[in-house]
Image (cartoon, rainbow, N blue to C red; front, side, top):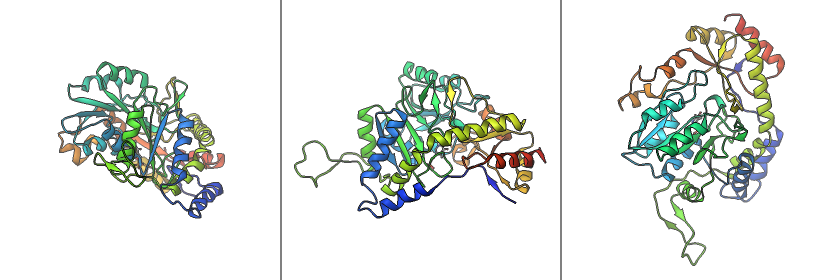
Length: 366
Ligand SMILES: *Cc1c(COP(=O)(O)O)cnc(C)c1O
């Protein structure tokens, strides 16, 4: 029996040849491919600056550092996300404040954000859940009113649009962070990127990516550098960047197929699913459905050769965040969503025959 996972990368010959090209070149890292990938992401999203990094987690961390987030600060994010959206604030010693989600989209609710703002709040990290953009204009308005920074966790959302513009153009944010992990829409193996329109933030991101080293200013010799802050090695390799360039060329095709699959499931499954809002044109990363008995659905799907996944266990219920004072019951919408959600197979290599087969198997038990 053919088995199906909830997600799967698409790698073809052009990707393989792109990687081989770098392996045969003088630069495996710190070469021309990283810059070329960064330029390609700028061209695609419309952002002015891009800094490629070795994961979205690193990207979120350097974004927090670039904003100067520190102990005593508070950062607001969604409880319905992957751990990294919250952990990046903790890396800098800041407290994480969660704001509950909207039922229809599972995205952070702007009204809940406003309730969580205190004099200590410095930044908001909206997460574009399943690939659908949050209502960024609304969130940005709240941020401006309270003098807060906005970093989009766009790990799910490369290729998505909000009000006719690409996620990552940063019209309604200070920075956006993409992930290129293999389960995401395009991949570099591990990898991520931060985009921004702000030159000062761009300079800081570059420095934090590479040990806090600077090569500008008074220096006389090309070998000189100055370490001005404590940075990291979060660099992407040219091998990864070459794969990213090749993948990015296919993104619009991936998006078209992902949207077709979502439409097919919406029409043919008859299961409760998220709604796409009028401001969104999503490159869907996940297709979650809401089912009455999730544990049973998961087991029965497994018997039918469908390896599904739950996105996500609410972050505030993790032991680490419970130690920070959170508990079950704190964010009811996220918790209700979690108890019912399960993500079905969604990736561009699924054929129409695969889709018929998947729907048939689900209808055997659901
Ligand atoms: C995958 C993911 C991340 C982390 O991405 P990595 O590239 O694996 O570090 C962060 N936020 C969200 C919402 C994600 O889904």
